[in-house]
Image 1 (cartoon, rainbow over the protein chains, first blue to last red):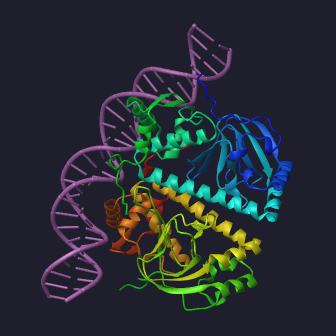
Image 2 (cartoon, rainbow over the protein chains, first blue to last red; image 1 turned 90 degrees about the horizontal axis):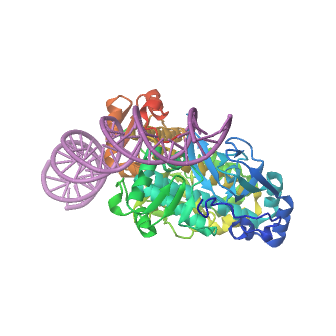
Image 3 (cartoon, rainbow over the protein chains, first blue to last red; image 1 turned 30 degrees about the horizontal axis):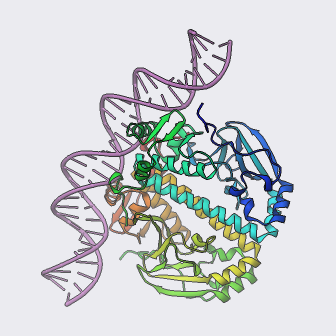
Length: 253
Length: 253
DNA sequence: GGGCCGACTTGACCATCGTCAAAAAGGTCC
DNA sequence: GGACCTTTTTGACGATGGTCAAGTCGGCCC
């Protein structure tokens, strides 16, 4: 088993935000110390959330806001026709449940891709804190705006780029996010299966598979099942950075 | 010139929200009367914003939040490679400038597609009101969440559906929005050109043109330049409603 | 270990939609 | 009206990526 094969288990067993390894990634760093102390008081630290367990379903009323401490989570929506639309993947430090922020009901579903640990904040407590802290409100707006920007980025990727570019962008984005969490950006394990990747990128399983194989053949990456090694980061970046040549030219300004 | 050919000029010259024809479409209806009174005091009613005039550019710091009173507006972003990504079209009653809500800088650009009138609220005034009204905060969060949901919908449309379905959805969406504004849902004029539609839907100009022609050939719509008449709404809805047959089957759950 | 099942890969084929090109329609200015 | 330019339409062609099908790999249970 290669090093870093779990990929997303970097949190310890702390019981205070101040000791938490994830502190620099967590929104808790953005509020002031006594607000944080108060947060500490209401947080439920949950572990043993196993693979395929749902954190919430679309339409459900929100019970808590959660920060992922270890593991990884898939966010998706279900269309009226019943098929799945993968909207993102959460890694440690990410906030889960913002989609219920305004209506009180979750817009989409979230499911664990592997064993997870979480910090959960009951909505009641959280809303009370929101009512009293303009700072916290601001932080939430920022987080929401970030999700928005992410959705827009995804829109560009999914709608307008060819398969190779989409896959390259996916790998680089994941790599960068892992690196920010102190993990090896060049050697990691995908916690989602090909179906999820394909769905997320708006492609088929076969195309994802073929594209990964092609990237390997070209010496850009090395793939073996869920294990990925980035061999030629420069080449991968060039692919992702929208070489005019490698890209269908859909109506642009 | 057919009736309703302007399509988006339904606001009068009122100087109070209470008299405004758009009241039922505007977020002003959601706040309480004295907040609205205060809003009235700071609103600048601007007209004569002509075609191709920009309301703001991406990266610019926000000067005001605006509600469109008449005309229509295109929202877009510019990628690092310099091409345009149309993210949406605003109609009367829509709020413009939410993209700057958290950072203070506009994420994208907004440009008038035809002569427009606006209600502008200077950011300073608006922020002050925000700091004092939890209700207004809530309304803003709701609006932001709605834009988010819209972005997600667009993601589905652009990434996963075939050209015919995309165009059908586009026409139906526009029709529904016009109807909500008291205009004819079956006969209207597109204020955007084919390039904008194509870009918005992640297609080429040619494909949009061909698809519109095909829909006309099939007796579903009638098109003449920018003028559109929906002839067979039922058929159009069926196309849009994702008939399993007419749709490439990209990885779905 | 062996069998089984699902995940993944690979190949052959073909539809959709992008590309290139040219003509037609529409708008503006004189 | 006529010249000129932009927008839109239409056609021919080809590449990308979806579909169908058959294999290979890997994990899990006995």
